[in-house]
Length: 153
Image (cartoon, rainbow, N blue to C red; front, side):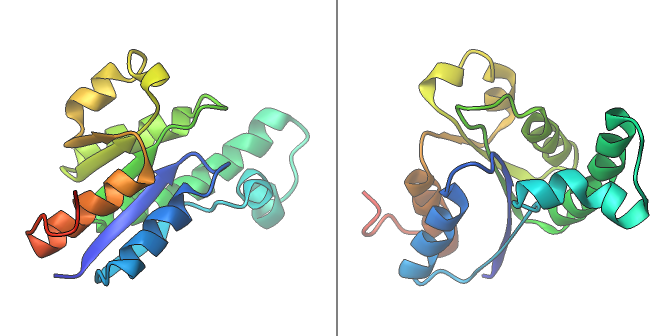
């Protein structure tokens, strides 16, 4: 089985690489894809491609729409969507990605710290797994692909 996994959410830590390298180390056949994680490129893609804007609202609006094309396309092609809510910023886009995944019937795995449990209780209730760290996600992916708990505990 070759799973396609979309990694979404927080971009200020190395969690994506932890999951990818963990799956590689386990010999799992996974295709990963993601939103653009270069913050400047993500923020400025709209005006850079479609022309400058005088107001910050329209600058952000153009970029958000171009990023949404990539994200919606990625989520629609994915078998599993992993959404990480980080500690530093409020990631409203991650909440949208989680909701969009659910609306499309995608299997959703969420990662966040205990301190965000209350704020994300509705997201957690809709997710099929709620994790505290990327290593737990790797173990879930291994279980899904291999159907075994060997070397996962």
